[in-house]
Length: 204
Image (cartoon, rainbow, N blue to C red; front, side, top):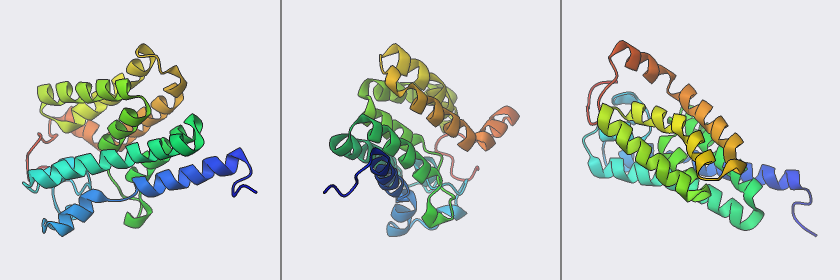
């Protein structure tokens, strides 16, 4: 007799697994292990790679970026392997939410950029590569991680359609909206001209 006898139960299980993976705060863990202090007291107080970079430790920032991306990718790959494409999309969304709102940190997590990229690299790798390229170009031109992230989110839906992954369009739209919501304070600072540049240690 199967452990989960309805499709809904299966999807709920993968939502829980995705959330659990996404909520692992690798930035906080690495900062503590590598003696960089409490990320809440550094820069923006965020737990993502951009704020880890403000500690001046590029290795820690790179590891945070990779691990935050990997947890989104692993959630997608596991769900797709064992339960199919619908479960993969549910796990993807749950992983993103887990990163942004982890229960372990009082639901105060990161902004989801690396996890967003990891999700798309695993779910639809051409879309993932296009999103990575978009971030690199926009961030290089603006020298602002937030501009790269917002531009990537805005273009992601176009990449989904253009590259033939229309079955993920709803997920893409939801992730884009969540990305913009998580960056609402950044958008205010961009408008005011006070947003920090990549690599700055002290600015929020």
